[in-house]
Image 1 (cartoon, rainbow, N blue to C red):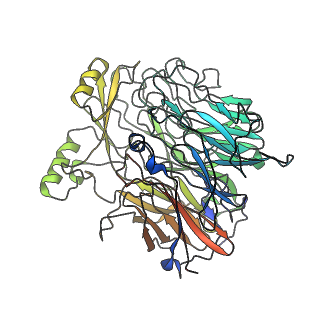
Image 2 (cartoon, rainbow, N blue to C red):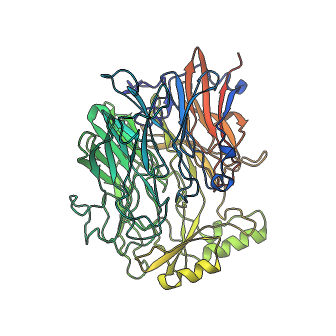
Length: 619
């Protein structure tokens, strides 16, 4: 096995994804295959969020991963409170409360996935080291990393309000949910924007601010009509978004930032935005110091399926086909279950990508790309087509109902256009791979990722019938897509007793040998009692150099450890609440800890809580 020289220090967890390139890997060997079964609770901290307004709590998701900087474990709660803990014992050292309004209606729930750290090596005194956080009400906040006090010289009293560029339909249509990116003395933030309210939605502009003052340094608008070749036909006059709601990756040595962009607005009808919508659904590499486009690679042309790039791009060293010197690469897992491997400097595919024919008989007025990109390697990580004969259920009645449901909707495989009769999206719009992203083992050149395997049915509704449909089914997701010919209804395809209509596993953990482009192993993730059926979930995995994979994500509320060589489960612990977050690890005073946020996810039915939980070997 060739040992690759790592470009990053990975013995500490200093970024949301472990390092600036999102490897989610730590060089810690104290916990290994021989002793992981003895892991025990080391400490548990409660933020107090459970005492927050119950109505707001029921619209929240605790998706944070802490970072370890300046001898402090620092994270944010869903309600934008930054908390610093003692890494040894979990005692609170300081707290900053952004005091967001709890009566707003955030389009993507109350969420804060993480904070970021920046240090000014030329400065001393207060705020020479800073913690940055984006908020649900679209502010960028800077606080002193040692005390938690607001940095007075940043913006106005430590905060800059991000202008969405247009009047919002309601407070919460535009928010910031992921950790800012840091490169040099620049802080970069994306945005999370409501998906299907309207075509003329806010633009998904990415903003770079001076880390000292908060002054705007540059902006990048993925749908601006003056970008080179950004739209093949027409103009960008009737769309917005293509935002970056997930985590941005940084290669400081090359002065590059890598944006995973989303679909242009709205998600399920694109007749008002003809063309490939080039910088949407793309990995876009920008010059970190200027915001200039260096290259871009699109994973979905003219997306009308909500297959935006939710996963953080992984910056790794890869030997394609196991040959030659390692190449600086970008790996982009997707909601469709495809993984694209790209040259980090040019964006050229490291494994061939084929443009394959896809259906083009969409709804009246739609524009559809005749082809979509498929990498030759690795194979898809999830099924991409289902037939009525594959319907599943606990009983004959269940199976028969699911068989009829599948047969009554369009189901021609990946990229079947949305329709008025209802189209099956398999995988559903949550993935495949979602924001939990993938973890990278640099020793083996393996990518480990958890995926979902359930179906959505998306039904287009003529615009003049949307209000009637909303009145008839007030508890279902029905959105107007105002400014287009169709609204939409989105629902998970389940049996009469609420079980997915497709066969299990409904959630998996997969190891991919990216050096060969093959799947090494795949196991169900999560289950009921002794039945390891594989459950849907969100959150990501973490790898240790001792050959362990830690992951929770599944809605059964366990943190698990797997043997990276075989996929065999070696340990699990029941969390005090849902673990819809990514674990992290660090070594402190000779003891290795594995830490995860256990606070649940209100839309997934997992138990809600407010815990940060740390596990370690018995003393």
